[in-house]
Image (cartoon, rainbow over all chains, first blue to last red; front, side):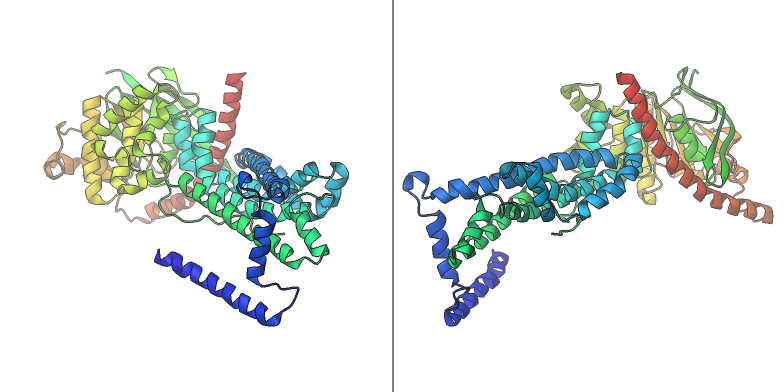
Length: 267
Length: 298
């Protein structure tokens, strides 16, 4: 409890300082935090009681955005983990695919938006493609690394007891790789938030990103800041949920140590 | 006594970058059903290569191995190994009980697996620890889990690779007595590979003394000690002292002639190279295992 208070005291303090500074500055580009909160309330939480006070913007923009984010991230997770484990357990495959992977992940994903706009139809397809392609690499590379790290003794133990292939992959390789895989998932989750917004900036009028752009173009700065606030809260919430899940899944680990990701964030 | 394990004219040569290294040359011996045989040899003499060939992890370049009459090609069905490195051999994400059950999933139903695991854990005195994770136990207890896992598998032959080399002296004594107790109770055939002369004399019904590399059998000694052994009285008995001296002599322990020194040094250098070649071979083994499984399924 004490640590909780300590951690949030700094945050609250900074908000108060920000409030005071903007109060004195009276700059239209920097509305007061209290104004931003009011704007956020007006945007999303002033709906009818029947909809739990949620506005249409929540159902038409916020939820579809979150849906695309989660869908893209999940597709990338399934692809990345299965491909990564397969690659990681085969030295030859890793040798062949290595340079290609390094090349692909070096491409900044936002730059591919124009390409995906041509290949896929504008809207959900293109947005999903952007998120999947962008967040696949941290998951894939960490899975490869994790699958490779199964030690020789575990391999020999499994071989001696004639553990069947499926049990070997699911029961030995995946748990061994799990700490690394989760590290990759964490990196890619925050990345998918960024890519969700970026993919909504062109070719669509739907989603948190496009709403943000509209507010900015209409000089509606409290609304714009409310959007930014929303993204921060969203990122924080998603990370918290993933961390809770990770703690549960890796509860067997002797120390609650976070395994650092092989690939760190880059945008 | 019928032979459980027969090794005939076994030889293994690793192909390394800078030429071939012969780890084993002309190795022949048998292990009778219910016997406990210790293989003792200087470090880097090819003991672990021997163990890997018997367990089918690598295919020997020469000779034949058969387990209760069947030639060993690939890992036999009823063979278990207790490795030296218990912390890596056990699965840290599984509880003690699930670790013991893990190899049984292929062949047994849930209830039977459970019963077998409980039984094996009782043999090694770990019934209370079944819900703990391996890392919550001491090193000696972890190795007992590994022994329980091997016993629950009901192997025709239990191979042990330096099983007690990573625990402290006190625990080592306890584990040695535990091994003697369960092998008598369960009538298991055991082959222990060790570099510890005292341990080989204390545990074994027979001792195979290996030469420096390439390994061959220098002596096959019968241990004339009463079946019931005791860490203090057995170790101070005349027969024990005489036998350990004989093994030590055969292994050239303590001899410092220039010739021996030179040979030992060369051996140590080679040991490093073999370790490298062995790792490479183990990796290849994974590929060939995959291929074999694919063949089996098609």
